Amino acid sequence: MTNGGLARYLVATAITDPDKGADGISAFIIERDYPGFKVGTIENKLGCRASCTAEIVFEDCEVPEENMLGTGGGGGFATFMKTLHGGRISIGAMAVGIAQGAYEEALNYAKDRKQFGKTLSRFQAIQHMLATMATEIHAARLLVHHASKLRDKGEPYVVEGSMAKLFASEIAMRTCDKALQIHGGYGYTKEYPVERMYRDAKVCEIGEGTSEIQRAIIAHEILKG
Image 1 (spheres, one colour):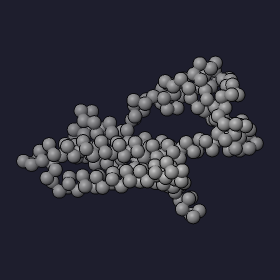
Image 2: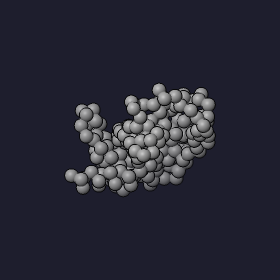
Image 3: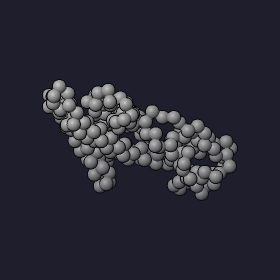
Image 4: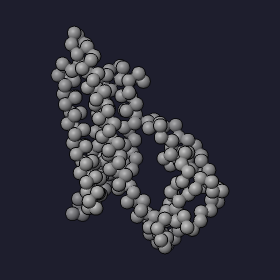
């Protein structure tokens, strides 16, 4: 669970009525001091290391009925999915931010670093990489803004949110890869921030539904018409 090792309150889902399938899932507020609640392993992650990701263990953990979110039980799965749909826009925005940071680092490095008597920014190969990065980041940002506006207006945004998340996360990976390449050997060291951005970007293709899941959602919705 994200920040599970630090959080005072957590939200978890559990099956409360097995006969109802997904409609029999409810969401609960869990308090850290409940008997039977325990924080397990703190994950040693590739990126986003400032965020604590922890295993949460429940052993005969009793939760008061009033801690159930919603009324009448059930609805937990629908609430969870609604949160996921909105969260995908957030991941898209996060990906755009990482990509923008990596692009700016690469741009500044290319302007300063000299090879063969001239800065890297004067080599056409580097110029093309920077142009591609800038264009793709701009497109990703527009997708995220569009999905955000739809959500703010209360209009359907499932497809647009998945598109924004899918495109922005993959652009973040491509941008960080190019930024590291422009830095050359220095980019592979911790002296420059692009190696961290490269590691951080990967989770955007995984969290809130992988890229494969986003393509499945988009395909399902557009085929449904």
